[in-house]
Length: 184
Ligand code: ZN
Image (cartoon, rainbow, N blue to C red; front, side, top):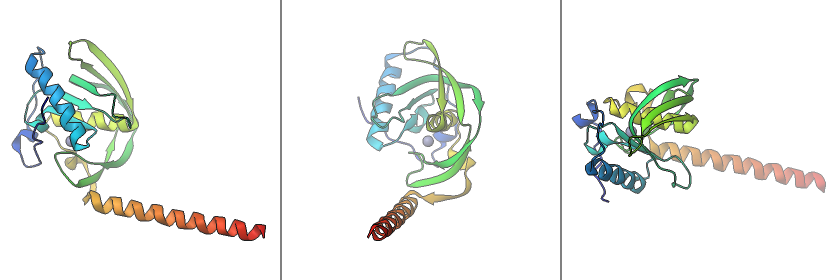
């Protein structure tokens, strides 16, 4: 296994359509392993082959907290989608940025595994978002094309969230102090 270099926005490989995988060669297996290692190392929840410069229809995803349920999908295709979700999204190819994107809330994705068996996966919420995001990469699209409003600095947003949380804690403390006062 080896880490691969993640291509960043502006690199033309990210704007091209990736090709169907017909045979799972040792190179494809190595690519899938390397992509997982690269994704985990970078703290991402998904990675598509074009992001490491390879124009093949291959994505890896792991949105679990334990980071132990990797999905490796070859030739993935969304066959059903419904609902809507709106939230922040980021991308390893657009480092340090986030933006609000609306996606389907539920998708069914058909794909091949590394033995070319066909599977269908039903994904909801965050996993559905990840699937849509990664599949867009295979067609040369980045989430920034779909952002509502401005692209923001991830750090700035994290700071705001931390401040909000601190504010809530203060309110809770004040409330429990009130309760205490009432008891006396
Ligand atoms: Zn991405």
